[in-house]
Length: 307
Image (cartoon, rainbow, N blue to C red; front, side, top):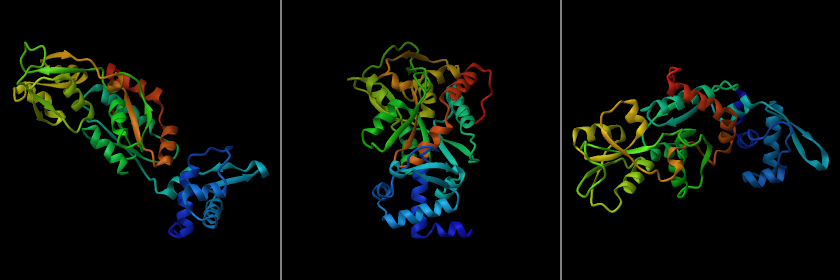
């Protein structure tokens, strides 16, 4: 299309940058001045002005000048602005749906992400908070669901990772337990082989916490293989999600452990903070109340999961 060919020009690139800005403003709000936009986007004033004219002439935005009060956004075409910046789908990353709690969260998210902009939404499932967060920070996914604890730990090394929404305690998992191969074991002892999934920030840290100063052998195991490896006796114990123990009706010896803090059980949606426009769009789409209601119905068995 001729219009989108123009977006490849210098002025077109300015229009794309400006579209990202205006996606975060609502009609009636004062918008930044040309000078402010020039400094913010590191684009020459003249190019900013040309980019603004491109957006206004295409009816992507309509501005109203109120003299000394500045310019205000009268209307915006969100669908067109999203097309201009190239957002055609929204894709998020979730933990593998091992438990009903995760199935409920996934079902709630898919329903919540149905939107008035006509943008299809999808979820990808992968183990390990480190993997999911990395995919978001590399802009391969638009958001990910991890525990608040994992998000805060990752944020210490990369402050650009932003927690967009948190769903509350008990929404990521009910609690964690130590599962044992020995039906009579009550605690971790010296010499035990302990399964650890280093791609999971939560599981790795809780294993180390549970082991304390015990002299154990840490055995790298993928999370979805931990239960099988404990049952077979290939490893003696590990930290696992209580919801999964109950959902699978696993006949295994387990003992609850103290959580590092409540954020271990709190589901959080994270985004790349450098993509401000995506954070703005997702905030409008995601209803925490509706997602939690759906999660509860799936857990209770009154709603069939669909994700």
